[in-house]
Length: 576
Image 1 (cartoon, helix red, strand yellow):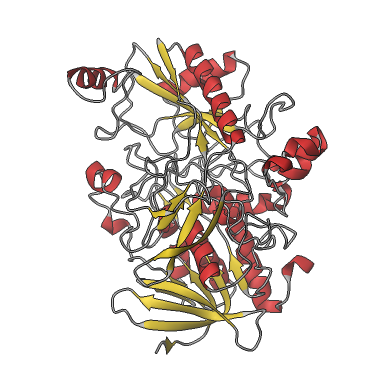
Image 2 (tube, helix red, strand yellow):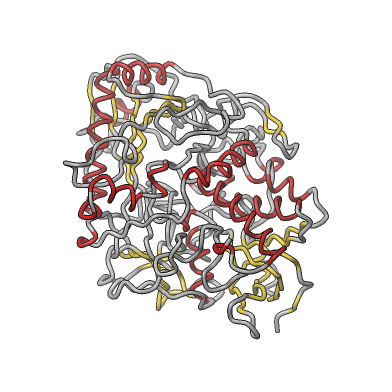
């Protein structure tokens, strides 16, 4: 028998960027908030020995235990889905802060085109360009860039983002809070080459801060030390903006906030007297195995993409998407990320072992609809960049194509090229397709007996064409930079969940203005449950050519505003 706890105004399921933002904003508004986090509590004091590539980057110290919770995968619905037994294509974070702890800090705003991709594409190229007859499901997001811009601005000020204006990005109301990072030699080479090619390079927006900064909530973030331990690692300097050093810390200053770790939510409970509302959540204490009911006036699902979807599905909230009929929205439009880059081999040496997670130079000439797609067989594009994140010795062994994967020649080439190889990468959008979706597995369960999420996914023809295009453009830049040899990234085959690619999973709980094509409205309020909010990259109708975190952060501030509005007045927010 589950123990029922005292009711709170708001409960967040997950305490990372999204849960932390909602907790901080709701407590400022005088609401009581319970933050439920299934992982352990952790903070800066736990990371004084974090410069351990084997422990953190290879053995995934900060990641989810896939023996307890994972997902199943198949390329298409006719295959048998099998469990992902170890971290692979993407790295699922766990514990307080979630993926916001181990991110690199690349903090991009999605383009205006992203939010209105369907209407803008149809207006410029005609309806046929959307390729709906080929199964593509592009949708507008129910919100415009201009409407979301103030929330982007708030997130950047909270995180102290270091950067400079993107000449091809959306209009900004304010400059970045802190100046861009240092411009290293390889970045200057990229800038010169791109400028010679009449492209528009600019410094990458970074959550590794160029200088010490105090945010509007009074939280201090320190200056980056360029130690090269960002992605897959926490920051022992408090120089990377993470939930733990910003919004969670702000929430914890309020007596209205309670944090409960080792609390795994297994169900969202629909109100027995009114099925248009939820009454709270059920969770399991992962230490004792005890079950608890946490009643709340508002429930906010603020965990990762897969878990937000899973909780809705196992709680029977919303209609599961069916690829055969196209009906239903829950699980629809799962997307990922493609990378079309190139590797350049140089005679000169570079300090590749130094860097920071978002130390980079980028350009958006081939992103969104910033270039003409009339004669191309894909929509969108990608951000092309060079980054100096730090080449650590275990996982960094760059060798020319054709080099054996072991033996004397491999060793010689690896040592020679460790400081002589630069990569230019095109981080591409992915196109939503009717055959790519999330569902619940009918055979496998997690440690609590709850069915696993089943991921059905493969790269689309548009994705393959886009990846090839970005690789070719990246190679041209490296040639202009003076590389003696340029190897283009291999063309895409079938998606493989085993090798690491990107932790940029999107879709499944999409947002929009139409309940027939989305799960939540533009306040991230569920269409079927008035007091249920779902926020994260799962809200994306497609994935853009950027890292998702800044857009997730902006949506979280929008969601927090919606939570407060609902707590005060109730009702449907899209009607305002």
